[in-house]
Length: 72
Image 1 (cartoon, rainbow, N blue to C red):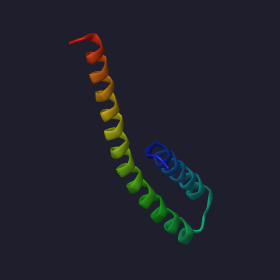
Image 2 (spheres, rainbow, N blue to C red):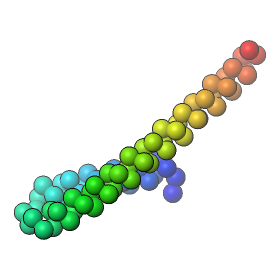
Image 3 (cartoon, rainbow, N blue to C red):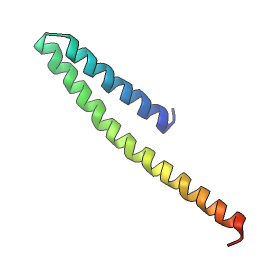
């Protein structure tokens, strides 16, 4: 699984848990689901940083290739 897939999966988990938390009334399950959601959000933030770094590196590589092709 690549970083983008992991990001998409975690984002889906957080969104789904948000909807589920809004739909249920049982405080015990709400608390448990919120803990899972917070864990997924923390991991999502870490994966987002990795994804940004990967995207920045790819952009730099493309810029270097463009400069090389232009003969600068």
